[in-house]
Length: 121
Image (cartoon, rainbow, N blue to C red; front, side, top):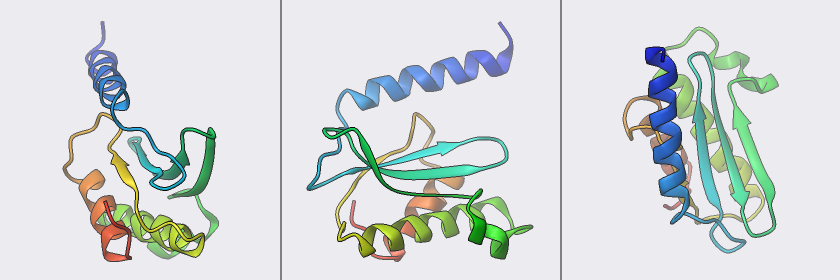
């Protein structure tokens, strides 16, 4: 098995293990992070209803303002964006789902950006 496939398989296994415990509901939805090599995505999800309440990513139309910046800075921007959108909908508390990734680098930067913008987790 290719190194990258094995690495992704381990990440998915960790994510499934974490997801057994981390469940978002309407009072405290889940802030889910997905990171690819080029982009980073964040969603606020109500797992009980099965709906995405808010989302932000580097593919958003207004992400052009951070184009060409270092990846951690872009991740921080995505965190701020998702927090702003969540606060507009009245969501102040979330539980953080790092998606099986290490809480380090871009995932940590996204979390810091969301916290700085006013989300609690």
